[in-house]
Structure formats: structure tokens, C-alpha cells
Image (cartoon, rainbow, N blue to C red):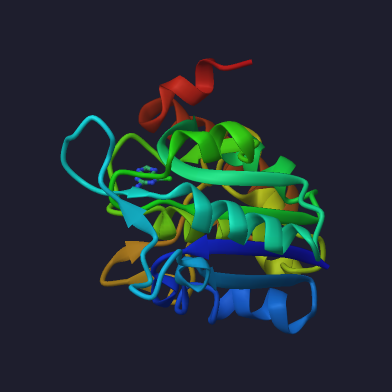
Length: 227
Ligand code: 6GU
């Protein structure tokens, strides 16, 4: 079973994303365990303080060293982590190869920053991987962590059924997925491509491959140029 621990100051934000659909099934099947940990549990005083003003001045607050170090070290007493990930817009941009690689690990610890982020010394001392989900700024790492956990979780062997197999996903082979259709075969005069109705699996496969290439060329020529 893969374990993902998440340290956050807003655990409520992560209540929803893992409680439904495929992430729920992964946990129900015992293939994935996601645990959120409220950083305030390791606050340094009775005011539940976990952040402070930045040295040198400037806007925003910074998550302090002590609560984070104590949280990480306490969690490390019961789990050996393969990676300690900090969610940050200045991290490496998340992509399918990273999801594939992370899905093969046993135990991950994800730290969500908030406000202006976390003290650099925690990054230097504990963090082994820094991930961004794209070139835009979110108000905290939680939604980004939810994206990363979803992308990883669905790749764990046994989580997806044949119908939802990850092998046919966009990006898994650097190609976008082809268009899909379901009933009715004629919707307001718009017809489903005839080849999909003819029952020749080889022709369907060829058609889908062509469509994938066409889509990738027009929508994402950058992917097409790779390798
Ligand atoms: Cl990981 N965190 C925040 N706060 N903003 C982001 C991000 C992460 N990835 C893209 N934008």
C-alpha cells in the first residue's frame, strides 16, 4: 500500500478531493492511504502560531522552522519517506513522467506552503523534491498537492479498471487522446464517425492513432517535436 502524508495549515481544503471516485476507490481497496496533518498540531505556542514575519521585511508571512521540523521528524518516526516534496510555484513543473515515477514509490510526504511559503532552511534540510503544477500562482500548495496525489494515485497498479486504463491517457505516449463518442449515433444530425460503428477493432485502433497524431500536431506541436 502506498502512503501519502500531507502537512498543511488548511486540512479542510483536502477533505473533498480524495473522498470520491477513483481516489476513494484506491483507498477503499487498500492500495493508497492519504493522511492530512494539521501543522498547528506542532505550533510553537498557545496562540497556535506556525508562521511569522519575514526577516528583512516585506509582505506576507512565512511558515516557521520549528513546527515544520517537528512535524516532519515526528512523522519520520513511523514512516521512512522515499521523497519529501514541497509544493511551490518555483519547483519543477509536474508532468506525466514525474507522476509515473512517483507512483512507483512506497511513502511520500508532501508539504504545502501558504502565504509566502516556508523558511528556506526547511527546504535545505528536509525537502528532497520541489514541485509546481504550472506557471500561475495559487494561494497555497493544497490544491496543487491534490492534483499531484490524484495523478499519482490513479497510476498505482489495481486502482484503475480496464475501462479506465491509464495506458490510453493523453501524454502517456506524448500524444493527446483521440475524440470519443457514445450513444446516440446521430445527435441532432451530427453523426459519429462511421468507422467506430463498423466493429473492426484494427480499423478503430488505426483511426484513433491518426486522430491522436492530428490533435497533437494542431493543439500541442511542442509535444510532437519531442523525442
Ligand atoms: Cl505547487 N503552489 C502554489 N502556491 N502555487 C502554484 C503551485 C504550487 N504550482 C503552481 N502554482
